[in-house]
Each structure stands twice: as C-alpha cells, then as structure tokens.
Image 1 (cartoon, rainbow, N blue to C red):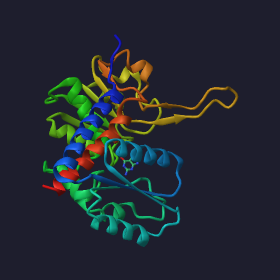
Image 2: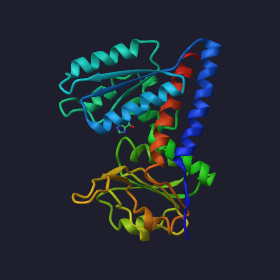
Image 3: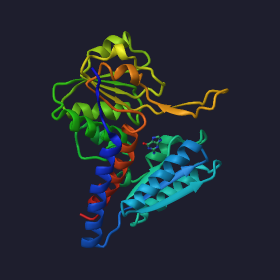
Length: 291
Ligand code: GUN
C-alpha cells in the first residue's frame, strides 16, 4: 500500500488566500492593516531564511511586516526595551521573537515580556495556561497547522489513539494539548520512552517532532495510520560527490509511506503550514484588538 500524500504546500496556499481576503476586508471596513513584528537576534543562517520568508508572506497577505534585526551581542535590557516598544505600538498586532536566542539571553523572560494578546507564537505562559485549560488563547503555529491537516484528512479525531514523539514547548507539548482538545487519547513519547516502536505501533495518528533525521522507522507504523512529520533535518552534501544537501524529516519517509494511510512529505508538509498559521494568528490578534 502507498499512503496518500498530505499536501501542506497546497493547504497553506489556501489558508494564505483566506487570510488575504480577510485582511482586505478589515482594511476596507475598519481602515486597519494587521501588522506583524519579527525580531531576530544574531545571524543564524537558518533563522535568517525563516524570518525572510515570514516577512515576504506577511506582505503578500496584505499585512505590514516590521523586521527588527539585532546584533548577536544585544543585551537582555535592549531586547526587553524593544519588546516594550512593540507592545505599546498600536500598528503592531503580532510579535514574534525568532528562537533560538543567543545563549546569554533568557528565552523565558523574553517570551513572557511579550503582551499575551500579541503573542502570535502562543509561547507566553498565559497562552500556554489558557490552551491547557481549554480557554481562548493564541495557539502555537506548528501544532495548529498539524491539527488542521489532521482534521482535513480524517475529519473527526475523537477517540483516536495519537502518539506525539517529542516534548518540546514549541511543538510536542502544545501538540498534545490540541489533540486532547480534539478528544484523542494522547501519549507523549520522548527519548526516555521504553519500547518506542511498540508505543508508536498502537497509534492511529503519529506526530514526529524529535529533530532526528529518519528516526521513526517504517515498521513502527500501524498500517493505515496518519503520519505527521514535523522534522526538518538538513543532510549535508556528500563530500566527494556533486549532490546538493537535502532536507529530510524525522520519519523514514520511503518506508513509512508503504505502511501509512496518509503522510506529510518533507519538505512540503508541515513547514508551509507553520507560516500560514502565523499569518492567521496575526489576523486573529488584529481582529481581537479591534473588536
Ligand atoms: N524557531 C523555530 N520555530 C519557531 C517558531 O515557531 N517560532 C519562533 N519564534 N521561533 C522558532
């Protein structure tokens, strides 16, 4: 059997289109343009690529993009001061501080300095608590995109056995909360989980977010399961050959697609959905701010 490919690229394009339509409407009706501020500290090349892409897609959706690139030796005080300025700026509806931050900066302190209403990443402790208690919050973009793809593929998720591999604050934990909200039976697996292949084998839904290339094996997957691969791992070009580096997920795609019912590819699966959901969150923040 060969799995259905879940086309995140096409789905994300659809979301961006809907966001752009709503942005045009809110501009027309209220004279307000949603604005997203992205803060990048340092010059990590992967982060620079993401930030550029976020800025481009924000503008394409008709929103304002404010980019703040700060030097790698930016002090905690200077960064907090910028966040305070953005919190107070009525033209900024969403604030995103690109992670990871340089090691001298306190990530939690910085994230929790963002006005929760502008926290389009959904990482602020208030939003984490609101999500965990089933209240209206900002929802982290990557897990939100994953649930949207699952709902689109499977319809009602209630009662399904879901395994999330990875317990990060950015993906694993909020992913588990969202699946719980969908009435799935949720297991969070991680590096200390015993008999991981057996745990994965029980799942109707597998979300892999471990950050290790081709970690989840094809024979761990239950036949017909839906597999969402959050991993983006760059495999360097072979030293001798003329081949280019390539991106692979956390799942051994070639083997898993022979067993799964549906699977997201890497690239072109979860990745494009994350930015589309960021735009949607920015629009939501703007709508909430303007009643
Ligand atoms: N770095 C990697 N993914 C993310 C994300 O979703 N948000 C932020 N702020 N930084 C990231």
